[in-house]
Image 1 (cartoon, rainbow over the protein chains, first blue to last red):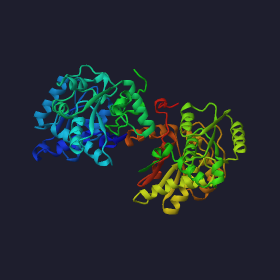
Image 2: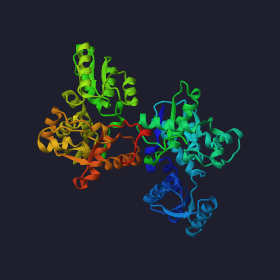
Image 3: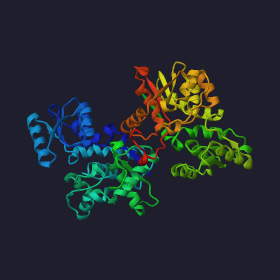
Image 4: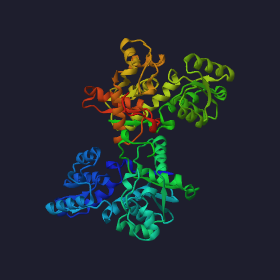
Length: 280
Length: 280
C-alpha cells in the first residue's frame, strides 16, 4: 500500500487544490469581485486561503452552529464569514445576497469543472511519485470532487490502473447511485466521516458513471480501526473521511489480494483532544 | 522552528539508532550469544529489531505489569521476553541470570558509549538536512542518551549552535544535576512524558556537564498543549516525551526570541485511543 498524504497539503486537505485552480481561472474582473461559498468544512478554509493568496475577498456562509474550531480556521485564513440559520434555504439565500451585493462568483465545493480539475492534480502527482503502476488507486467519495478528478487524471496516465471509490455504509448514496446509473440523493446520513455526508454532484456523477471501476463500502467500526492503524503505524494524523479507503480494504480484503494499492489520505483536520474513539 | 521527526524512525523512536550501533560494534562471537536489556519502552523494541536484523537473539526483561501494547510490540520485533516482578532488584537479577545463561552482552538503554554515538547520528543528520546553522538545537532528556549524543555531534559540526535539553518540571533531575554539577537522582517522578522518568546516566551526565548549554523545564499542561499543536498543525503523531522540547519553548519564550530553533521530536509511540488529553 502507498499513501498520498493530503493531510500535509495546505489547509490540511486536498480541497486547496481545487480552490486554488478555481480562483486561478477567474477573469481579472471576476477575481477582483471575490468569491462566495457555503461550507463549514475544508472547502471553506481552502477557498479562504486561495483567495488570500490572490489578494481577493472570500465570502463564506456558515451555519451559526458551526464549531468554533472551524469558524476560527476560516478567519485565520482571512475568509469573511456570514452566519446564517443551519438550514439549506438560509445558506442558499445568504449566499445569493452576497453574490448580488458584491457581484462575486460562487465556487461550488465539488460540482464545478475547475474544482474537479484541481482535485485531479492529486492523482496525477500520486502516479508521478510512485515508481510503479498501481493495480488499484482509491479515494473517498462524498460530493465526488476528489474522486471524479482522480479518475480522470489516473486513467489518462495509467489505463490499466483500476480506480475505486471508498464510501461509508452509513452514507452510501454514491454506491447506490453508481449501481442505479442515476443520482439517488443521500437522506440523513450518520457517519463519523463528516467530510462525506454530502450527496454526489451532477458533474461528478457523470464522470464517475463513465470512468470509475467500483465503489466499496465500509462500516463505522472499520473507519475507527483504520484511523487507529494510520495513527499508530504511519504516525500521522488523518480525519475520519481520510481513513475510509483503508477501512474499505479492511472490509473487502478479497478485492485487493496480491494487488499494489494507492490510497489518497484526503485530509487531517481533526480536533484531536475531543475526538471520540468509542463506537456510538 | 524545524522538526526532526524521529516518530518516523524505525520502531517509532530515535532509540533504534543506538541499538543498531551497539549491536553493530559487538564481536562476531558476542553477537552470536545475543543481547540483554531490561526496558518496557522504546529501547526494548529498538534492541529487538536491531537484533532481528543481525539475526541474533535479544532477551528483554520486562515487568509483569507492562501494558499489552508494549509487550506485543517487543514480541512483533522478535524479542524474547522474560517477565519479572515490577521492582528494580527483580529486573536486575533476571537480567543477570540471562547474561550468565547465554553469555550474552548487556546493552544499557543510555549509559553506553555505542548507544550515545548511535543516538548522536540524529543530530548529525538534522544539521546536514537543515540548510542553515540553527541558533538553538533542542532535545528532551531522560537518561540522557539522545541529548549527550546530540551535543557531541552538533557541537562538532556547528560550534555556534547552542544545544539545550528539555525536561518536565515533574521529573527535573537532569536540571538539578546540571545546576549542582553532580548527579542528583530522580525520586518518584510523575509526568505524562513516560519516556523521561529515568534519572540521567553517568556517562551521559559527564558529557552534558561539559558541553551542554542549558536545560529548560516545562509544565505538564504545556506538554499537552505542545502535543496538540503538533498533532493539529504538523499532522503527525508524537508521544508526550517528544513534545517536551516544544513545551519548553511555550514556557520559556524569551530564550528563543528571534532565534532559529531545531527540535528533535524523539518518538511517536502512543496508544492513541487510550490517551488522556485532560490534565490530571
